[in-house]
Image (cartoon, rainbow, N blue to C red):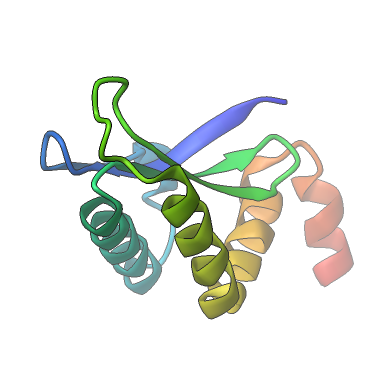
Length: 114
């Protein structure tokens, strides 16, 4: 399944990336995504990414560099599960936004919402 990265932050390079295709999101949501990405990259000592599968489902991913033996995969998985619970509404809103504005079914969805 195709993935499209929306935002990512790296503990290693101390950099944050927001895909320009998502500049249409409201500023408050973009800011919240930035905070989440940076916070989790720092907390997990890795690279944290938020994006979408082609069907609009949100994916949250954390990974460490191959040579980073301190990266805790189990801890990262638990943090992502916690994030999914704490930000359930944000994730739902992102999924809806993606389906309405970015998928091939957007015209059908817009008609249903009118």
